[in-house]
Image (cartoon, rainbow over all chains, first blue to last red; front, side, top):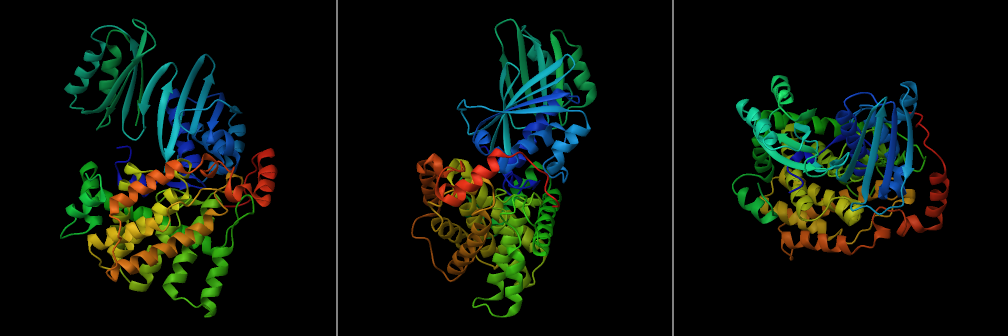
Length: 219
Length: 293
């Protein structure tokens, strides 16, 4: 079931006009920003399907940029995102793409700052609910509704067991988990959604394990 | 959890649909937290109604100010229908005018359909003089109905047309109002089904893709339809087609609505001379900040 909570239906509290094309867009932008973990210098935002057709009317572009700036769906400054981006020195460009996506409301956000870069693809499912479907080369299905760890690691035996063992020792229950890799023996990504927020000490301990490259935490 | 209206009504026997939804939600957090969060949603709904009654204008200038007109008409005493009916549609318009003006609203189930539920419930609350606690429980009832529709069909115009948005909102409001008025869970389910049946086939054809025309006024229609369905259910009228079969019909109709009539601004009202003119005007220009929200 995609919708679980009553607040998926009665909510989100948001700045209009569209839950899928405005609030969902803010959420995808914000998730991309959180995954990037720092203020981007440039944002390239690609729009597909219905997003590409109607983004001006729904202010989808404004909403995506507001999310990239770190705003949430109910931030009254969302309509001012373009001006605020300029003020904070963030350059941005929107690219309406002709390619037909799997889901009508799809966007790919590429954020860069100096030598850092991330590419995040997300879809807006309706009612403000979203799903990230790709981060850099890795496929995933992440709603961003629950606390989550994205652990980038080398594709080596025992790495997943080491990470989950440490979570178990901290009494953290895993609600959903998936693993993907670019190719066998190269870089891999495990996405662990948890019932509780993972404490910083545990994140630190996981990072110390062999083969772990980087951890991104979503609150 | 519950996956169908039938299951939901069975679980709610002896209590209310809202109470069952609240218990399920409390499993994720706590009863107190869930109630407090829903009260916050209600506060946002009420604030949006007030804002809209003061008069707002959207960025495009296409919508705004009609809630004010309705309120003046209501006070003039010249209306044929009753106070609660008029207030319902006035509040629904007010909420959606605020949404179109990029103000803060509570999606229920979506932003495009956010006026129906507050329109009906806040007008009923004024008439009944009932507490916020009762209205909060009615919102839980509405959420339960919305969850079943969302998980078995769809709630976005892009996926299933306006019937999935304003139609679902109207069904949620019909059930919630029926609970608020003391109807049984079975009556709530019949109100839901009758409201949804009356909205089947409604297409999503907004001018230039904006959530303005015809969305704002369709929220008023959704509120009126919810009142109709709830009154019928409370009188003992029942849906001839079983509740979950109606939701299945919504899903199948949604799938067969052509893409041009699913939030792509290519068909219906969007493809009238006026609609095409708006598209030319709007899609060639860039974003400008609204003067005030």
